[in-house]
Amino acid sequence: MEPEQSGAGRAFSAAALLRVVLLAGAGATFAVLLLRGAIPSTQEVRDFGEGLGWAGPVVWPVVFGALNFMVPWGILAGATGLLFGTGAGTPLAVAGILVAASLQFTVARAGAGEAFRRRVQARVPRLDAMLADNGFLTVFYTRIIPGFAWGPVNYAAGVARVRLRDLLLATLAGGTPKVFAYVALGGNLDDLSRPEAKVAIGVMVALAIAGLVIARRQFGRRWRSGSA
Image 1 (tube, one colour):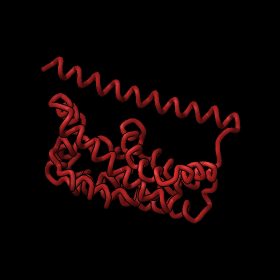
Image 2 (cartoon, rainbow, N blue to C red):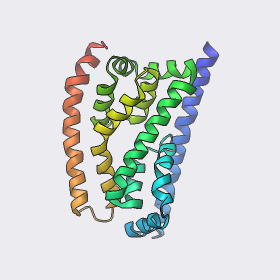
Image 3 (cartoon, rainbow, N blue to C red):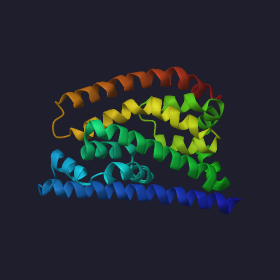
C-alpha cells in the first residue's frame, strides 16, 4: 500500500507545482506586456471574442472546464467577461463551471483509484463526512463561503459518493451569483465605475457576509467539535 500512497502524493505535488508554474508564467507574461504597453483594451479583447463567431460560445465552456484543472475558476470567469461581455459571458462561465465540476467529479469517482480517494479524504476529512451526510447543502454552502476552493470540493464530492446531479444543482444555485460578479468585474477592468462593476462589487460584499454567517453557523460548530 505504501508505494501506492507515495505515488498519489507525488501526483498531487506535481500537479500543484505545475499549477504554480503556469500561474507564475502567466503573471510574468502579463507584467512584461504591461511594461511594454502591449496590453489590449477590454474592447479589443471583446472584439477578438466576437471574431470567433459561433464557435467561441460553443467551445468556450469545454475549454473553461479543461483549463480549470490548472487555472482558478475566478481567473477564467474574468477572462470570460473580457471575451464575451457580462450578458453573454455569465451563462458561458456558469456552463464552464458546471463542465469543470463534472470533469473533476468524474476523475475522482471513476479514474483515480483508491490511492487518490485516500489522499482526498486525508486532506478534507470532515468535509468528506459532511458531503456524505448531505451533499447538496454542503456543496451549496461551500460555493457561497469566501475563500473556499471549489476544485477540492468537486473531487471530494466524487469520493464521498455525492450524486452528480446534486453537485451540479448546488453549484448552479450557490455559485451563479459569484460567477456573475467575477465575469462582470473581468469585463469591466478598464472602468470599475460602470454600473455592472458596481453591482458585481455589491454582490461580492453581500456574498462574503452571507458566506461568513453560513460558515459560522453551519460549519463552525462541527469543525470545533470535530464531529461530522
